[in-house]
Figure 1 (cartoon, helix red, strand yellow):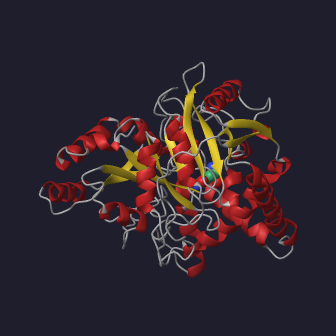
Figure 2: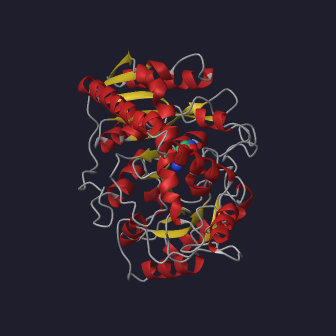
Length: 456
Ligand code: GLN
């Protein structure tokens, strides 16, 4: 099944105009922060005249607003970069455009991608595609919602600790967080450099395979990129699959567990073996993440000083310039993370927090590797609950962080993990199942998901 193929053969100008029109009609979701209308229409005309060709010729898409994109602002949903225009094109967008795809606009997110609900956006929350009283998830909430509403056939986002997988599960679409290093981060606003990844949202596994294949590969501007390994494959038969015991406890919403169990039955019916596996170290993963990631954030966000990029506050001396610019430009959650990060890196506490967390991270990586000696894939929920109400967790950072408990382990270990729609709760809220694989098994995960599509 592919949705992108439905667009091919139609006039690019019509495809692009229809997408922009649909996005404007769905303004109430607050999923799009800006349009790149003029440039998009120009490119569409070139596709129709045959000047631009490629596998994605004339296919409209939306990029999370932390990708530098020519033709509109790059705000990272922050006041800091509110009026910032990109001096260059992100590699991921450049590669999609080289195949003829057309970026129509930029999607809402939690400011600087810090969050799991899009409520931390300086421009207001994005509403869930199926229930406007609920969050879209985050931080790539806008990208998930435009894909779920069918405004565009695919959108791109970033996943540092779950920001593609969790909103995908909350809105009922496919979300791909690839192996660390699969897609170049050049031209993307950095959050935590040791776990930042770039991936996509689609309505079918085959579409996701195509988009990832196009974006993947070595880029000399991002030295962490791997040589291109992402090639669509046939699904492997008789896979050994482990269902993660620690993710299926009573603390997890009953309907979420039920949908994951249904998916496991489908895997078994397709000839795969599914057995329970235990990874006791998972209970420490969230603590590792919320030490390591803020540490990297505090360092990456030091560049926003009021001098070099974006906002510059009125001030009479340099320290006031730094202080006021950062105070006005960052949201509360950004400041919280900068403070936590600076604390865990400070000389008196470095050994106790940062170093300890990095050691624990090695144990987590080893535990995954040991399981992958036996198992092809690990399965579990994406999130312990379906989409929560807007405002429900907003005043309690710990509660918000706890929602990331199932997505951060794959991020810390650099593993590919995808979110696959697995039906709905009794209230009609989408539930996603998470498939985690060994490094570079991304295409195999998508092939597995694709093989089970359609017989839900
Ligand atoms: N919700 C997670 C966090 O707040 C993940 C964010 C992300 O992947 N960008 O850190």
